[in-house]
Length: 354
Image (cartoon, rainbow, N blue to C red; front, side, top):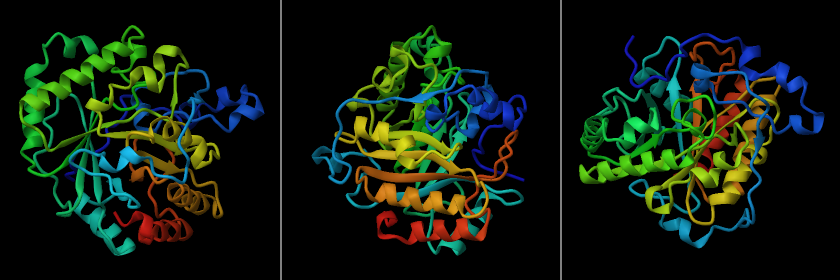
């Protein structure tokens, strides 16, 4: 069956135990276990054994219940709206086309997805349109990166220009999430795979940004999206070391999954406190493990409450799938009736009426 921009399959299948690093967690002191978050499901593609990760602890931060003055002007072509959060999904459901999956969620939630998240490899042709997306919704294209040298030396300029022209051809605002989770060691575009060079990542980002500008792709809103914590933990691999600068970023995104009973603030609080004073925030990938009973539903309710208390969050994009290869957890939002009810309540709340 045809699917547009589906999440990329891993090159090798990993067991759930290997992927989550449960053996490594057993060696972590109990007090630290609550801040362990391994990679999002996409990263099974290039997973390697690594030590436990810890969340960054940024310096001073804005109040959680007050909107910083500069944020209201942020978001680029997909503008941030004070008090309103866009709600969207990466959507790939077993046995359904994208259009069928969108129709199911529309019936369940009584509303459209405002962001439709799709994934593309570095050398793919990026989409000129997405089938089934609502007229008032925004595509979010997660575009995999490559080694920095191949971007910086200009040898991939033609490929980048082609990508810019194709997104420009959508003739609607598009969110571009290039080289996401760069602060992890599981992707070829991470500093950990490129001589521990955060400057190389930033130079690559700026080169792409400049080429898109030269091609007139001014409908693109740039989403810089690290993982919620870094691996390895090093000065060259922090949020601050990898940030391209306000001039080159429209939204600050973050990937974070509730795998080991983390609270939303454990996962998303550090990056919020680092950037909410000058950029709108977008939770670009999020999901929750179902540990039985109401555990998943209760976590969804906690997420809704956390977003409600953090006004610089302007979008949340659920990882809504049961098809991710090599991964046992079913991230779709309707794994049981209580989880679906909690998500519908979130979707119908005033905070998510963006």
